Image (cartoon, rainbow, N blue to C red; front, side):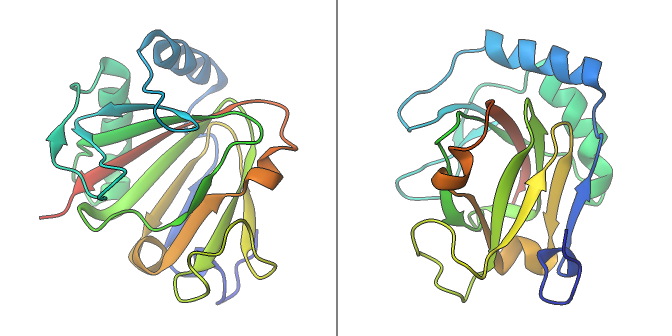
Length: 189
C-alpha cells in the first residue's frame, strides 16, 4: 500500500486489518445471506436505516431498521466516527466481474464512511476527484489497494470528500470469490 503524499492513505484513509475474526465473518455472512436482497442493480444490495437513492443521489427515505449484526458493527465502529453512531448501512455483494463506478459518497452522508469487507480480498481503485472523475474503469494513475477480507476501510477528511473510489469490473473479473461489503455512514447535519 502506497503511503506517499499522493496516496489516499496520506489524506485520511485508514485500513484496519482483522476488524472481525474469521468466526465473526462466518456468522456475519450467514446473517446477511438470510436477509432479502434488492436486485435492481447489477449487484445485490440491502439497505438499513435509510435507503440510498441511486437515481438522484442522497438518502432520507427510511429503510428497514438495523438488524442486530449491524447494531453490533455500528457500535464497534463508533470510535472511527468520532463517537457518533452510524445510522445507515448498505450491504453490497460483488460477484467476479461486477464493480461500482468511481464515486465519492453523497454529501447527504456524514464526514466518515467505513466499509467492512467480507468473503474475499478484492482490489479497490482510488483517484483524486479532480482527475477524470467519470472515466469508465480504472486509469493508469489510479491507486489500487487490495482490501483484505475482514478489514475495514475508513474514509475521512480529504479521503472522504476529495477522493473517489470504485471497483473496476475488469480487475474484479479475475477474482475467484464474491466480496460482500457492509458500508456504514452517519447522515450529514
